[in-house]
Amino acid sequence: MIKGIVLLSGGMDSLVTAAIAQKDCDELYFLHLNYGQKTEDREMRSFRKMCNYFKPKDILVADISYLKEIGGSSLTDDNLQVRDHDGTQEVPNSYVPFRNAHLVTIGTSWAETLEADRIYIGAVEEDSSGYPDCRESFYSALEKAIDLGTKDETKIKLITPIIHKSKAEIIKLGAKLGAPLEFSWSCYKNNDIACGRCDSCVLRISAFQKAGMKDPINYAIEINWDS
Image (cartoon, rainbow, N blue to C red; front, top):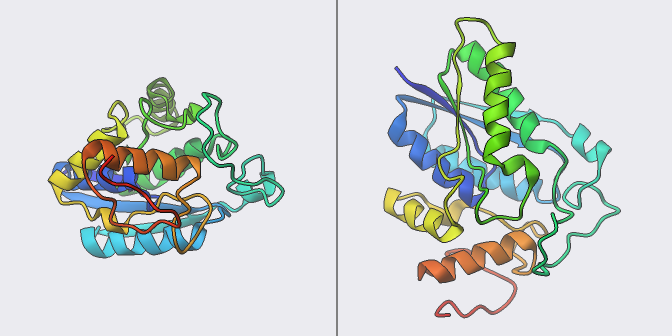
């Protein structure tokens, strides 16, 4: 029996990853983190909808709000404003320092307890904001660390099934798998209507346009879905 833990934020990438994991695994477990992000409530609503849809065997919601106390990211620090997308190649200030390592280590503790074989994470390297903790080399190194830091009989694989896909390819794959894209939330600023201007919104809108599809969520700005 293959047991898989999905690190599920409520975003589009983790949603499609969950759909992939559902095909691969006999048992699914969903892990969600609250870390004091500005859209925490909205992400939680998305996560709950996804749980109702996929019906995992169990869920874990972990609170690591100390990341808000650490600060350094516009997603968690009230003194920093989420910037509109500006097209530069710099890592945006929405990057939460080393966040994905926290995700994976909590997932590893749970996986070892459950005797799960796999941890799925919807990291994207090729067509993303350029966060350093979304690189394939990072997950390869983490997998080695997991092997060294767990019991000898524990064998956990880190699965990053969409890491080299473009956002448009991820959307098409999600549609093919029947993933409920309307449940996902990507906006960094708002909890009600997506702003359409932050880095995450711009990447998402552009991807739907390239995929030739209309995004099922609403935006605060007018968008030409035929472009």
